[in-house]
Image (cartoon, rainbow, N blue to C red; front, top):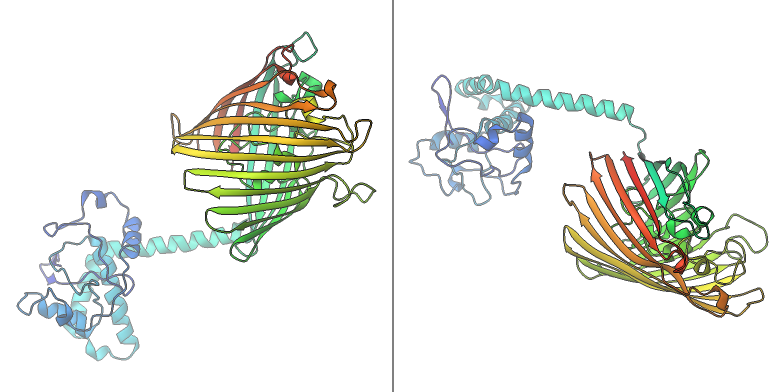
Length: 538
């Protein structure tokens, strides 16, 4: 390489890295004498950072100029190059033992190389070998320092600024082990159409909120302890208001303005292929095993409760534990055991003697685009708060025999196929076999079905946007030994929304969903729920 100094002096240097490795990015042709147009737009710090990270291919240290296959004794720079290689050892060259002396370099590259030689000279001085240095060499070094004073000063200034910033962050950081994240949802919503069994419109327009703060702590870098604080006042458009649970929102719930603990769990690895969870409160089972629905998020995705994921994930809830084991990259098994009243020491309660749920899912990741899962749940309801369908579907699907002890076995499948980065097809189907364990219908059986298909369109219209369309059948009691509690008709759930990302932290989602034949009864008028959801995340 050839550098012409302001005073006309000519100096030859190899491409010298900040570390003793062979390095020079291919950024210029041999006939160029300065940075390319693209390089000229980069900041000093970006240039220096780029030079210190690209092309780090370690090679054996060059100790003689004769080791360069493209340098000949007749070259005009041979003596200067030999001095730098053999006397000071601050030239490395390329891994193929070439020097490539005709290649142009930028001032940033030269600044990095000069810094390496200056470090070598300081080492020689510290080792009391300064007698190897000649006056001419020191004069050249002095001129080089003057010539590249701006670049070297910029490097020192940026490093000092980073040191100050790092010290400030360490002093002001929230915690060395805990990261704080949060989400706030504001919504305007209303329902339209006659309520089930009522001649008038069911609701007035509401304005409500949900706010969450997540404290995510890691002690080893591989585990996670989450404590979530939550407050909300979103009314449930449920049976008490609209005559059916089919009209519920995805993020509903009213704590009366009080803030309480929502998620509370600890996740940790067991070996390299197994993950365990200890769950004290909340934390849905859909977080243990993938639901495979890209519209799952209640703050960014589906606007209805039913369209988020299969009801099977909702019926296994409460305190307990979970395990996920990867047999291979393509096959993963998840199991969980949870109890709703695990903290209640009274009879027919507690961890094992009350309402419990056992869950398992085998997930197959057949490719980066196609995934599907098969799952099963065994759930026992002791005779209070029976909720076979997880707060979705009809009354008969939720309590096929009334509020009596009920045992259920639920089977299902979920799948997702990504046709392209901007189009994903997903869906599920579920079947529940319910058995009455008490009451006048003891021994009776009921069959409950549900299904849904979703279309997701990521980045539709703009980056970060998401459009979603879902159609399905909420849980329906198709068969029941108690004939009066059998759903005669079929309800259809149709939903559409569009999430527009205003910034990386703010999104606005208008959405609506329609319930045809609410409660699986064609005598009931169609109901529609519309909303505008604004989500702030940080």
